Image (cartoon, rainbow, N blue to C red; front, side):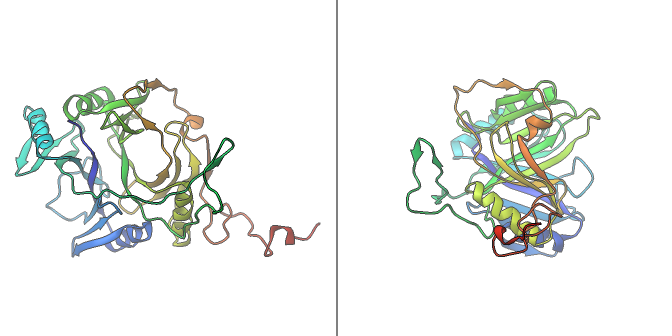
Length: 321
């Protein structure tokens, strides 16, 4: 029995209306709201629940607001839910409300497990023409005006004790190590066969706990670019991207979010099976990004931030000096 992925992420915001605008621009659909919260969904029904930091009904935070308050993971069916109820029963933090299981991880972060309600999707994505595999014939590759994320693909957390926290997710929740930064970070996936990681745990020298970023899967690398350009046009600040990760191979673009830390569009990550052998990787700038653009691309000029915009209809319109 394995977890199936992330079902819901619960976040706080100091300015709820600003957060509402951000996640609407990000491409999520608003499904419900009241004076203290807004509920969004991705294409497959993965939920982002954004609350005022004054909401007293939320689980406790592990760092100062705005931040992550809870991750809800999903299982396939009742049998799988009962399996995890047994797995978690010995934990002092475990409690159950009907078909909702809850506990906290070693950092104190609230975790929930439910029977998944996300939809199966069949989406048309870009086909790439490689030298020896020409699949896109008589059709251009797609161009996206904006992104509509499919789901939350992974979350990255700062932890104070990497070994203890990683062991918790492996022993109690069935996670598998994909790759490691020895003594610094563990990339974990919740199923033996799946994307490169659903969770990345990172221990910093100062031993802080908290949220690093939440990553949203989109259809293909072209949607990463289209989504990032749209967010730029909307006035949101890029942290880094577009770029490419050597670990996981994904194309990425990171933005600052009003709910704390960063959010990421990403696509084209590695798909792993039980045959995959985890690697020990020395961290460093070239291992985080094979290449990346600091500050992003201006959504209007379509050039790197602060670069001069093209002056004519074609690049060749620029007069010779």
